[in-house]
Amino acid sequence: MTTSPFAALGLSPALVRAAGERGYAEPTAIQAAAIPALLEGRDVIASAQTGSGKTAAFVLPMLQQLESAPRGAPRRLRALVLVPTRELAAQVAESIDGLAEHIAVPALKLACVFGGVSINPQMMGLRGGADVVVATPGRLLDLITHNALGLAWVEMLVLDEADRLLDAGFADELARIVALLPRRRQNLLFSATFPPAVQALAQRLLRDPVRIEVASQPGGAPASAPAVTQHAVEVDAARRTALLRHLIQKGQWTRVLVFVATRYATEHVADKLCRTGLAAAAFHGDLSQGARTQALADFKAGRLQVVVATDMAARGLHIEQLPVVVNYDLPRSAVDYVHRIGRTARAGESGLAVSFVSADTEAHFRLIEKRQGQRVERERIAGFEPTEPTEAAAPVADPAGGIKGKRKSKKDKLRESAARAIQQP
DNA sequence: AAAAAAT
Image (cartoon, rainbow, N blue to C red; front, side, top):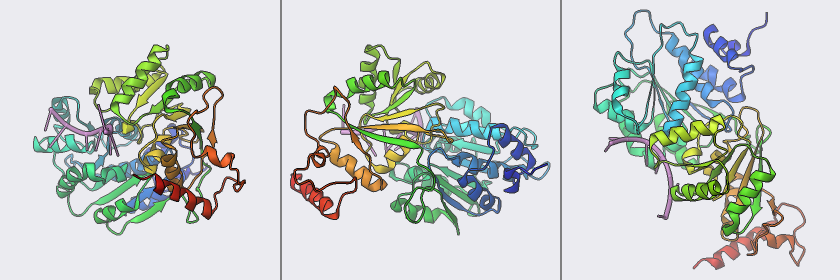
């Protein structure tokens, strides 16, 4: 009889069994690194590529900690998981539920709470306590105000998509929550990205943390084969919908997630696609929670072929068999880019990310490439060639013939930045 | 006109 590699990490039989039943044969790199440290009770700040199993990396040790409850102890909230979107809360809760299946603690109780739905059922659900709560920050505070739960017994705080939760939009709420937690606790910060500005903030939450970085090696090279194939297609902004329609048809994309910049644009683009006979829907934060849940369920079930979303869908969501992500509008930042394209190529699958680039967004895309430390070949699609010149088109027909390979010389970079400077008003 | 998150 061979020992399961999960057992070798120190996990209990109940958890090893649940992991096995969910098809986790080998721990991923992030799991192999994080699980032992977390079982030791250490604080952890961990970054690893999208789709590389971060959720299970914190859920498994968290459940093991909960499993160790003294017999007959009253039920108390011992683990708190915070996430930045409602859909992600539901998804993480589902994952915890699955992995907890064989835990002996009589009916380990899990509550998932988020806004946009009535608070009463959530308050009812919390009566008699819960061992784990997965929450979006606003509703959690609301429930605390209603005395539906308290944080005084929390042993473990998890920030999933930690860099997002630590940025300005959540700062107030997060500070209020942290103030209610016991000083002595274990802190777990997970994300695919930790921009330097956020690292400093994270430091204040952590105590002597173990830092785990699987996404890249010191040299900057990717630690694992990049599973997402990235493409950039040059197209006039006005022809993007027609091109998208064409690509969906030509590529026989059965399921495609399209990102745009605004809520309005999700409606507009989805509408246009619907009128050409595609099963498409908009997905953004201004929809009713019912419509949000429905759209995601329809997409997962194959009733929708295209979902046009804001960055609400950029982080964490796991959609099975999603072969393609399209950046119809480019993301604001390289961090957003990483999360968006990480909706495809998950759990060992491959995936395709297509970004539309036009004359006025070329410079911005180049910045994303630079921040990401990766170049993406520009392409054109027959019948959709741009009429307005893009800057990237220039090097191909460079009269000086100075550019041979993909890599740009220092001089070229300087010339580009000079060109950008000149264009500033 | 950036999105998200409490009501």
